Amino acid sequence: MLTNGLDACFKQLREGNPSADLQHHLQAASRAFHANHSILTNHQVSVKDRFKFFHAVVSPVACFAAGHRKIFKQELAALDVAHRKLLRRVVGPPAGIDWSRPWNEILHDWNVRVSIFVGQAGLKPWSHTCLEQHWKLAHYAVNLPCDRWLPRLLHWKPVGQRRVGRPRQQWDDMLRTFCRYKRLEEWELAARDGRNWETLMPDFINFCSGS
Image (cartoon, rainbow, N blue to C red; front, side, top):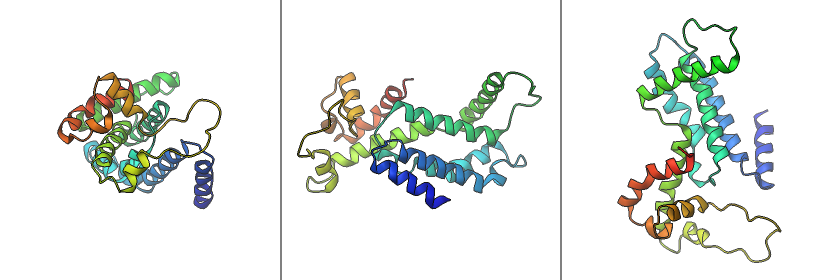
């Protein structure tokens, strides 16, 4: 069953489906959660400690190597939806909840309960973790020697004619858009200054997530 799922994921990647890699990581994170279900939903353990375990065991699977992916807002939203879904399992529903109420109202109250615990624990949304990886990878890439494959790949111009229609989004499109928005120089120049680049990361996260 697992082999079939991986084969389907790789097939989608070959066919140019940008969300295939994300779906693979979310499925892997779900498996990691269910493998540790007895600990993560154990109400004899404090929510704070369960969050720590979740952050150590499940989150790295969902966000692994996320910096190499292109940034799409719908994918960031999908990450946070999956994150909240699993965290609801961790904290459990509000006490004394009336299950006869409309599901959207129950879900709202449940998410409010999750957000309170998340705020107390200082847990980051998965989308923020992935955007941090993207931002840090940009700094790493531009400070590599020019003969390394990653800087060469950033400047690679494929030969031949592209397909008719809107050009595909590139890995650094959001970096370029953000730097124009902030009236900065080209991102490859701005990213060389590690200290200043680090201070801009919260602004970049808010810009990409629309918050």
